[in-house]
Image (cartoon, rainbow, N blue to C red; front, side, top):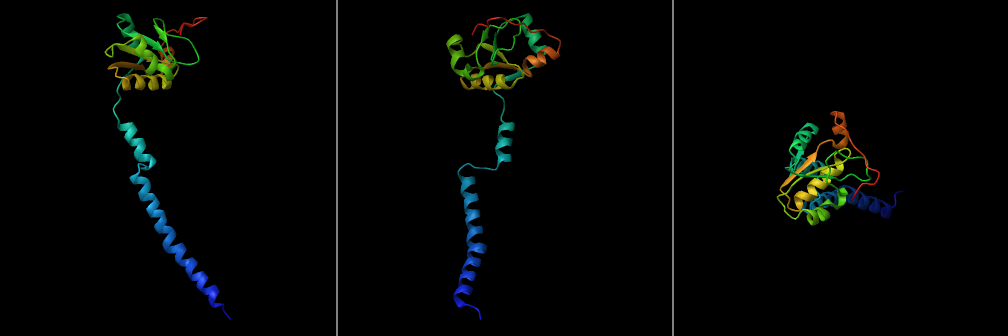
Amino acid sequence: MSNPRRIGAIARASVFKTRIIPSFGVALLAAAMVLGGAPAQARRNQTEDAPLRYQRISAAQLQSMLQRKDFTLINVHIPYAGEIRGTDAFIPYNEAGVRVPGRLPDRRAKIVVYCQTGSMSAIAAEALARAGYTSVFDLAGGMVAWQQAGYPLTTRTEPGR
């Protein structure tokens, strides 16, 4: 014979599994979306679609700019791994937004940043743009791209920072 208490418990568990848990999951998803937890793909597209507030330049463009140097060239790579001739300053990429304004208070100053591969300088360029600089350039591909284009790097025994 079946135990009526056991059958009742099984029925209540079934209702919990089929009605309450799915409803909770839908409510949780809705709350996450309202609170800014949009799916990762949507966040990625927003970032990818956002316009750059600085300009990426190629090694050839930087070489051309160096012929008529009217900008400050900043190596933001840490640790020191060499430099492009004509570099004016060494400022770690994660300090650029704070240290550059002390050296270049004019927010219209033309600034070119670079690092070894372009990832650190992209962060620095964005920080400078957020700090209000309006003429910021980032060497795409960094020193690696510079050398691949056939341009030399120089090194110092004690880089000035």
